[in-house]
Image (cartoon, each protein chain N blue to C red):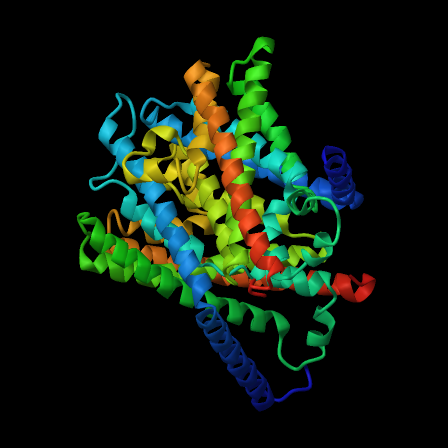
Length: 276
Length: 256
């Protein structure tokens, strides 16, 4: 927009922001309207947590010679936090796949609001409601379990980092969804990225338990910033670790935003040149 | 009935193979997915050695059976995956006017492309980790056949909830996913309430744990449990589906 004045640019930016806020609110309301689905997700979370806590309680109880030593209190609260974030990330890749594959993208391109920003904002709203719904289920389960609780500050750290962790997740899945510009179905890249996320993010166990070389690889990935860093607040909460985690998350949010924008532009060029 | 089923499944498989690129991407994607799952467990056992007497080889054997059960279910009975939606959309109407049984037609409607990736990985895991000999093949096939029967029968029973509840589409999928979740972890971690659930509502116990026990040490008692559970879950699924079909014929089924 080289011909626009600074005032006009500010107006466009403001309009884009307002539209994104509306899309965010739409995501919130849509998820609230589908409350039975949200309840189902909370139930799935509780079932997954039941299985994983059974696994880690068994490991903690057996004390095998030469095995790694678990942190005091075990890993149930850690996996409770990582699963909470993972299950809260909206499936934006499926919506992008539908729009791109079925040729429904073109009408959006004629509209004045940026399509991708709208979709991401809507997915963020969806994720926030999931975070709240599943979070409430997690707190109720925790209260009923009778497990020893970490300091109250840990919950504040996890709550803040969990939101940013889910936002990183939305951007990762946005990248997966944009793969639909090149492949017909995004299921293959989705399941691969998902498993890399589980592995490098430390979904089932903190990456600090991995061998040193693998930890070094995992900790600098966006996956660790998304779930390991928030989850680790349940094991060893501290202001310093919280600050470092927040910085890492903000850096990854910026990097992934640029990456997603580049993929979008490349994909759009392809569609405009060759069609779907 | 078997020849009709075979013909329907053959069509479903050919349909899933039609888009070659998509088929290869889906299958290869699932293979990579399964490899990462194995790496996750490798990392786990590298650190913790064992869990309740189960080591990496035991879990790999369990995963091998689970993958084969899901693969055979997906390739040969793939219609189970969206059966609840099919019921809710009223698509059974067309099948009711035909002389063949409805349930087999529903199961043979679809063949899932990703299941081929699971098939490859399941066979590889069993060949690599299960220390099998040629003499074990009948036992393996029986264990997988019974596990698949319980898995598909349970999925049919969950999907049949659509005859009663409009929200059964996602709930049926969730229950099937819960069953798979229970099936992917060492049997030694389950005790008390989780053990009861794993052998009743979400029968991971009969889908993989009993077949794995049977593979480890075949005995008449485990054989009886294996075949008995497959027969029992098939009967339950058949009965629930038929009861639902009676409601459907009376027009009492919700739509969605």
